[in-house]
Structures are given as structure tokens and as C-alpha cells.
Length: 414
Image (cartoon, rainbow, N blue to C red; front, side, top):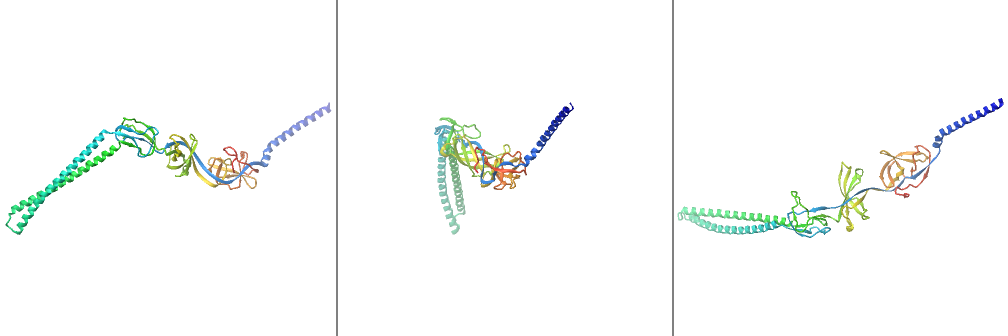
């Protein structure tokens, strides 16, 4: 019995010892596993830093609007006598779109012409009066000169009273001449007034012909034959005749975010895509406001789009692709190689010694798949694009060059 108990005790002791030993081994293995992993080489996927053409683009959607679009009003009130346009009518600059009947102006023109005729007759009468008075003055002056000459050469032959009477008549006729000449000048001035009034009324009557201020297409018609058109001024609620849109050129008004304002230049080419037509048009930046709106933090920018083929119509939805910057030999890496933390950017580089380096980088243009690196990387260096969550600077790794994947699907060309 004693020997059996001893054997059982020995077995139990061995089991306990074995259990303890196993617990120590497990604990040791758990504690030393990270050290062993960190000390081992980890294979990472890398790509080389390359130089390649880079372009930064901005796509903004907007609505096509005519370069010019106006409501055409009548300058003078009148009835529509002729209407030469309708919806969709194409007109040239200066073409007559409608003719108004304005009886009051027609009567005024007749009155102006009559006034001119009457004033011309008045001028003729005044000219005759000037000639008559001038003839009288010539006679009185001749009489005075003769009497004054005789009185001077033969004193006492002619009474001084006769000489004085002749001189008085001469001076009186001279005053009459000056008066009639003044009346003639006044008549001529009055003629200029009535002629100016005729020109004024003719100018107003010319507005009875409503013409197109520029070449375009009629997109709305508001009046019919016989309709009374009110004068289009601020004091009346006048109805326009038509709405006219310039069709050979369109505007694409786009709000450019303030981040990209510095890239906008007059004359920059813009590719305009119109999905409804499945066509692309080449436009250019024509003007911008040079001011960022406080409410939207965008800058009003306009792109001129020629209506090639006369296929564009107002209101079409379009997308403008602006090229903000372009380089032929930019230092670039795939987008997935860049680590971003706030405003800071960095990349993991596998150094010549096989250790991971955390490089601070300055970024430039961003393309669809590649990012320009202005500083921090050199051409040919290997940057890590695989999972970097478990990597630490200074860690030994094994670089395995792989092909970066495009965000558009498929592999990127390198």
C-alpha cells in the first residue's frame, strides 16, 4: 500500500509539474511573439518614385445660357401693324422684326413740316424787308452826303436845318436796317428750332420699326398683330414684343472654389461636355469676377462656348473641365502612397538599408491616380503602397515592387 501511494503521488507530482511547465511555455510564447515578429523581415509592396506628365483638372457642372438674351420693347407706344417674326425665327442685326402704327407721331411730323415751311416763308419775308429798308437807307444816306458836301464846300448855300434833317433820316433808316436784320436772324434761329424738332420727332418715329439689336433667335413672342404696345420705360408695366437670344455663342457660368482661384487665367482652354447631346465643345475662360463670394467661397467665372453646328440651346446641362496646372516631368507617386494627417502629408520609404523611413512631403498637383510631390522624395526611391497599418519607422522590411492599381479600374501605366 505504501508503494502504491508513493507511485500515485509521484504521478500527480509529474502531472502538476508538466502543467506548470506548459503554462510557462505558453506564457513565454505569448510574451515573445511580438518581439520575434518585429525582428523578422516583413515583405511590403512598393513602387518607385517616377517622373511623369501631370495635370490637375477641375470639373464643374453648370447650365448653358445665351451670351446675350434680352426682352425687346417698343420705345414709343403704338399698335402692331406688321409682325415679321415668331418663335424660332432667326434674325440678323438691324433686321426689322415689327412695325408699329403711331398716329400721334405721324401727325406731329406733318405739323413739324408745316412749321418749317411757314418759318421759311417768314425768312423770305424778312429778307425782302431787309432789302427794302436797305434801299431806303441808301437814298437817305446819299441825300445827306450831298447836302453835307455842299454845306462844306459852299457855306451858307444850304441851310443847316436841311443838313440836320437829312442826317436824321439817314440815321433812322440805318436803325431800321439793323432792326430788320435782327428780325431775319431771329427767323433763321426759329427755323433751326423747328428743324431740330422735326429731327427729334423723326427719330422717335423711327422707333416704330422695332429692329434686332444683334443676330440671334426669337425664343419668346409676347405680342400679336393689332396689339397695343406700351413704351418700354420704368414708369409703365410694358409688355415686350419678343425675347431674343444670341445663338452663336453661349456662356457657362461656373463657381470656382477659392482653393483653385489662383489657377484661373483668362484664355485658358476648357473642355465642355454636354451629356444630353453626347458631344464635347472647346471653350475658354473669358472673364471672372476677381472676387470670392463670402456666402459660397467661390469665384464667379464665365466660359465662352461657341455654338459649333448650331446644336446648343439655352438651359442645357454641361460639365466644364478646367486644366488648373500641367507639368511634363513632375515627381509623382500613386495616391495610395501618401499618408495624410490634417494638413501634414508623408510617405513611407524603404531606405537603402531596408528600413522604413517616414518622410514628410510637400504635395503639388493631384491627378486621378497620381500625386505630385514637390519636395521630400527623389526619383527612383521605393515608396510603400501596401498596408502600412502595422509598420513603424526604422523597421526592417523586404521591398517587393508591385503594380499600383488605378482608381478608374485596372492597372496604372507607369
